[in-house]
Image 1 (cartoon, one colour):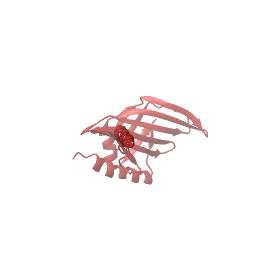
Image 2 (cartoon, rainbow, N blue to C red):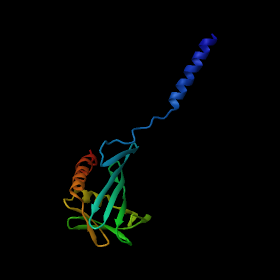
Image 3 (cartoon, rainbow, N blue to C red):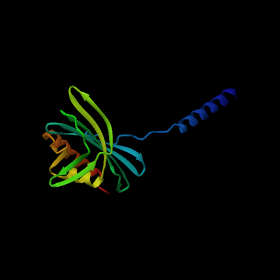
Image 4 (tube, one colour):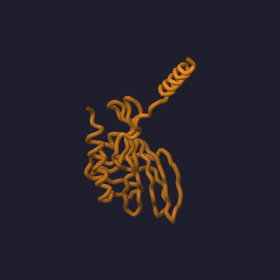
Length: 175
């Protein structure tokens, strides 16, 4: 009888322990190397577009984060690093889609540092989702900082086209 009682207590303890453990859903839904998709809750997904490089005399690496709740898109957090040969005072970043220009003021300076005689700046700006959408669907992509137009390399254009096809023309389309 004592052994049966211990067995029942043990079974109840194990059942209680298993029911208390929370199972985390898979944080990353996509296996795409250019962006990540995160489950937030039953009606919201978060998207992170990994850094994309644009070059000229200087270089900018820009990444984007936004959420989709049902069919509504949040504003987009745009973080970018600017690598320059000279000290710079950056007040805005301009996304260029062919003849259309979207200008965004810097919201926050994240950091400034020097490395190997180069100046590295990290900034944050908030942009509209529709402007980001237009930027990725455009055939011509460039960024302007301090009157310098920075362009993507052929490899980066390929990356942009993959993001366009997989994310903007497929995954984000309402069902």
